[in-house]
Length: 454
Image (cartoon, rainbow, N blue to C red; front, side):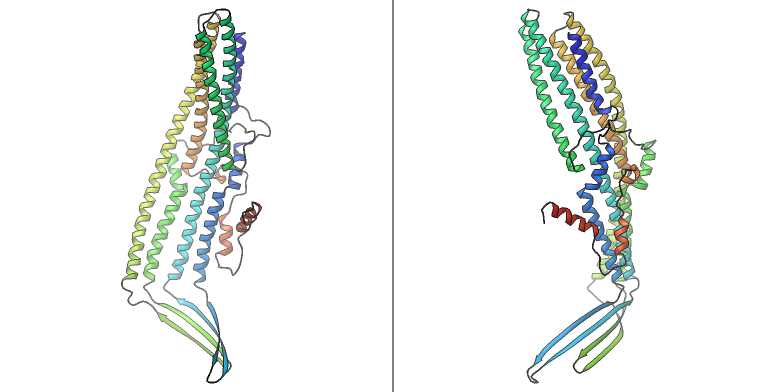
């Protein structure tokens, strides 16, 4: 009878841990599904895409500075001496003819700012996808632990019934029964805690993915990373968005120095105008050459400030490289530790399962007490929970390393979802069109209206 209960527990335990790593079930949500949903519904991505579109408009505004400026003024007034009203219409136009490249530098700065914002958007994308991976793995682990805890409660209840039966016939003392009762209460508390952890994991999943998880499939084979730590760092130096954005910031700062110098040079503008009154039409046009002579040292201060910001950007680039390489090293070490831990916990589970089976058999022969059985069973449970944590840790470490290398993107992972193309909006507005409405803004408006927030 006891051997049957033991085998039932072992089977349930294997199923509980196997639920994390077992074969994929039909119609189950996959890890790719979770990442795709997070990518499509992320408010953080939408926010930063809007920030990028705002940066795109800086390019349009810089381009507009090279185009003609047209203004009008309609004037009307009453003169008491003549007891009459008079009206006039003034039309004026001006255009920059030559400014020693200051306007062109402004366009270059805006373009570099756009490229830096694009790289930061990639960084946000990596964070969103990594959170989706973490949420997915947390739910899978929590579900597996709940299954183990439930199996543990069922087994201890059976042990408690058996202990009471043996106490009735005088085989054991009341102390053995109390030990089983105490262990049952602890197991029930642990099961309740596991259910709470699962609820928390489900809420995090919903916040990241956009919906509560259904039946989750086992995680797939982790993607490839790098053959060595040096190779991983080399990829990170080429691909990580933090480094690429910092490089853009340095270029932007260097352009700002040239622009500060150009601000000290003269500017040539062409002007034309027309004045329409009751007395007739007057037209005028001309060229204007002008520039600063003395502004209290403000222009030199702007130049020095630009140089200081250039130096800060260069230091920021160095720090970005150091931080990225450190994160790659940490992720690489964590992956190796997680792999070793997985192997060790697998061996621990096998040994604990054999020990539990042996203690059960010895208890049946009277060589072991109820406490021995409960302790062995607890050791097996702890080993199985450790195995779950180790496997989750290994998966998480793989994706953490990909993120540290700058490869945790929709494009690199080959996810089946249309990717956001930041160049579409940029190409629409870079030549400063007169009109146009952001399709993304209209989409957000519709969502907010459906939520009753407008």
